[in-house]
Length: 502
Image 1 (cartoon, rainbow, N blue to C red):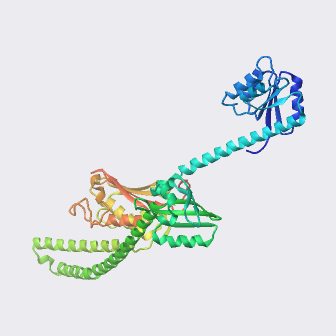
Image 2: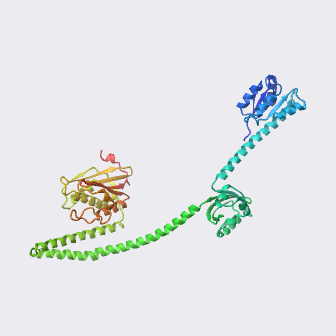
Image 3: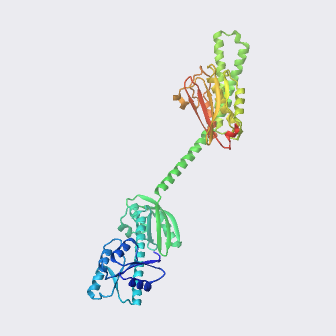
């Protein structure tokens, strides 16, 4: 507590005595409170923080002994020093009585100025020291509670003997040893052998601060990793050690996972090379016989078809159709396998122009309905890849709505905070949402080849392209009520959607 103003209460039934004491003891840092009766003095004492009470013994309503007795019996005022002032009661028995009632000392009237000032100065100094001691003890108690409530080890170690001198509760709790066992052994006793040499080198380094990790053995022979931070003062280490065992285990797990990941990446690279080899084989070894089959089929159709029986003509038509389907399947598979290696080259795309262009260029016997095209925001994406998404979704919508009267395909968008969601909606045959998880897989089809032709690769291509752009794709549908396919693309450029349509 810093020294500041001190407050003195003077209780005397004679105003002139109060006045004399105030003048005698006056200093800039002293505040005087006064009372002319014992009851008034008690009231002030109970409601004010006081450093000293000068109390007259002889008072009419309540003498000084009674006031002192009541002050000392109250928790709030029991420690305030009391100095009795008396003109008459100099007998030893009266002095003893006053001291028994709690007085620190006596002032005898008429007052000796030098003695009075000296006694008051000493009592105020002692009171100041008492209050400072109380505050320091309180601070030490709080520090003790904080240190012992801490989960980290907090300790001091003698740098020469390496023995623990002071340590908190967590030290024993963490390592499992009793205080006696901690006192009996140096730090090196608890260390793994490969850490002892490192500690010895650090001890000889004479640095002011040290930071290191050690593996320490607990009483149950398990081990814990501790992170030490030490301030060196003279021959003492003031230490804080935190249990980092979980972090070290996590690091080891991450290291193990990274090694597994590295091995998996190598396997994936090998698989990709095998896939490239397979793609080459598909492109050359399968395309060549298909081209031959297609060429000979065309020759037979041109020169010999009229001479074939109706049954033979039907089988020949099946051969041509399946040859054509196999060619398309090979093309789709090659396109799907190449997507993984394609680099996304983004440009700003006018989506409305792209949709109109794809729809107008669409060559399919299913194109019977109408296109409903909303105003669409621009987006930043790879033009060729996004065009493939649009082709696949539009052609699917046209195909699966071709058997419906008044067929239509509706293309629009939904604006979100960090993405634009485009949708392609048709009023066709739809599908059962129970099979939604199959929709975007390779070779997964929800309708038979007799109902609608297709390879089952188109939506897988859509999904892969959208994912390469950092987007997502999903669908909603009801049987015989149409389907809506959504794909989102992140807003990687600033697009003011409202201003585009004002």
